[in-house]
Image (cartoon, rainbow, N blue to C red; front, side, top):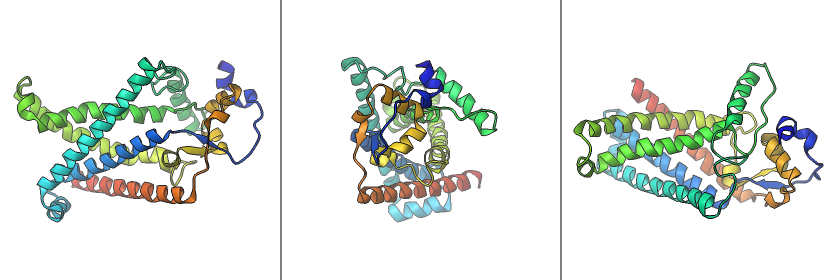
Length: 287
């Protein structure tokens, strides 16, 4: 395994070149991501007017949709849907790890849990950016993808709990002091802004605007990557699957043209909405 991590190009057995596609995400994972980014956009689009209610654009939006009460209703609806998706994902992780005894959920090459290799990849990437070393070789998930993943867990814990504490204040007031509910308002607002700034700048750039993916990484929509693209982005995973004879089991169908076009429309729409909300956030916050 050490040799594989150091020089995958030397250990990979020859693979017949053809126009094949490799599965990266299941249909359930893609649907769950669709729910995630849709509800997050909804929460951002409704949370910002509530946060900056004195802004001209916030008052205009409230007047257009029927008032801030309507905005708050949509905000709560998106929160419920996102919470349901989050709990479904947690249930799936628990079932895979403890019921089906699936290997690699919490450790190994396929885990989303950070490990020492991610630390070395981060340092190596920084050295690569300034020309002091080669580009790191990535496995199934890169360190920044794991960071994005766990940021969702952090957001659900902090932003989610503070939001529900404000929503059901009489209930939480039974066992929380008054200052804690006041703190929940501040935490929910500031952490929400941080999440918006992170998703609409760092996550969008890392996922779609970086070299090799620009102008959009389609894999989360189609679920597959072409074999050359997969080998280029995930050389260690590609080498491991070839050497273990598991590559053919991961083969998928080539995306249909309508699927690609539909994915582009959805993806670019989400990015456009995100960038607009990012500009409104910065203008309102610093204005």
